[in-house]
Image (cartoon, rainbow, N blue to C red; front, top):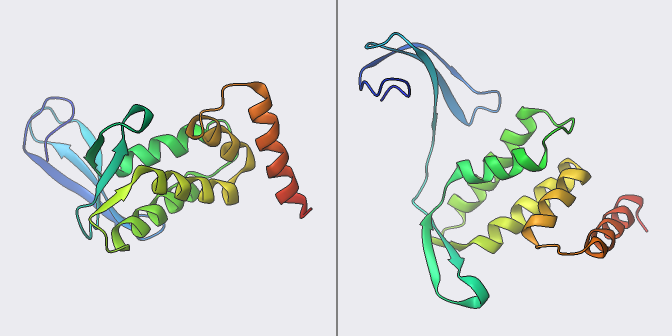
Length: 159
C-alpha cells in the first residue's frame, strides 16, 4: 500500500479489525520509509458497475466506475452539523453500495443512485434529506424549498 505522505510503496500492517457494521476491515499501517501511520479500509466488491451520467440537457451519456467515496462525500455533506452518527452514515452508504452491486446490472443510471440516497436520507434525518434534495433536484428559488419541505412535514406527521 502506497504511503499517502511520502509515496513509498512499503508499509507494515500494525492492527486489523472489522468495522462496526462488519462490512469492511480497518487496517492501521506504518510506512517503512517515513514512519508515518495511516488507516486503510478493505471492502468486498462484488462486481464492477458503471454509472451512467447523462450530459447537460439530455445530451450524450458518460460512463464512470461506481465510486463509493462520492456517495460518502455527498451524504456527509448533507449531514454536516447534524446529530447523525458516522456509523449510521456508513451503514447507509454500505446499504446503497450493496444494492448497486447486487442488482445484477453492469450499468446503473446516476439518477437511480440519487433516489437511493434520497430514500436513505429521508429515514435518517429530515434536514439532511432536504439539503441533499436541494442540490440533487436543483432547487433554484425559495419556493422550491418551501414546497419540498411541506411534503416532508406532511409525511412526518402522517397527513
